[in-house]
Image (cartoon, rainbow, N blue to C red; front, side, top):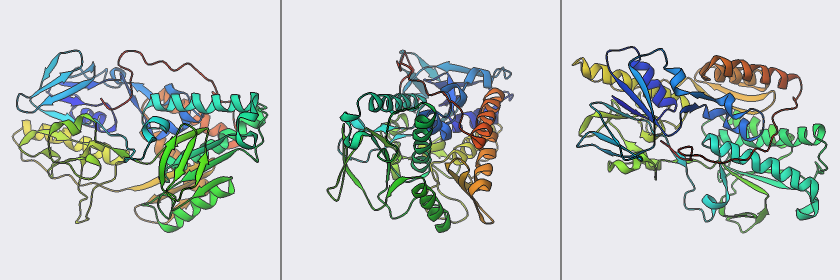
Length: 423
């Protein structure tokens, strides 16, 4: 059995078959698993990269039936049942789980891919942190280079990633000025959050959306709704209305796509966002030995609901687990089972002591209670005991005050296979 990808879906699939009488090979271009929901905290100097990453070999070290192969998958031959790697080697499989994820989607907006900073990989987060901190240092040394003597940061996308990043940027600016004594006028430094829709956090209940917008505005985030972006340049963004916003840094949180990833090269039917169409059991049409899970799969809602499941970590975990279990059922000669997503709710943090937690049943938790619920859930899913300890200490200290923090500008050089993009 081969599993492509060591994200949430890939790890879940591997855990489902761990210790079973089946040989498993996990392939990924990174030798670590990244906890993507906390990448924005790495990008805004709240956490170190090592706090949200964990070696794949360590995760499965006690399971002799699971091995890890560090490499980039370049193609899958469905007929020959082989996986091709960038070093020219091939892996034969009898069962395959494709959990290659997605990548930042720019949706044809001119200049976005070249000039905006995505936030989907650990490398993205490192680069964004370097750019933001470097910009603050430059503004301190040469304020005349910026309009009004201070930089503007633009975040495109009002979903959870955009809301969380905008809130964290404001907090970073505050602590950098208070603790690091940067000579930047806080009244002139701006964080602008843009979204094409008429509200933030689509998918949340109206009261949660209103609360998020209210908190962001109260923390001096310039929230612009119904403001689609038509162009991104190296000096700012242009809105469809024609308005120009000069920006030192543009963060792209406008969504993801499967187009251009490994899953899109399979030659199978696709649906919204380039996601691969899968059967009820998550297998490919005509290839019952191949399963697609996580962000790469167009997974229909269960219980009679229309549309596709969102590209969120809980969906990836549940679908990856289901794919692994179906492999075991297939090997045992048992019939396949349809996948049913169990929606337990969605959450988003807006900053210190402020979050919204929308559970499947019950009221929306807001403020400190929502923030504590958000913390608890993320600690449960975070991989690695050390990482949990470091993160909980960091968050506990931040609750009381803001620590000196890892606001370090470190040279960001990609080596070998450590590049952007899915496996």
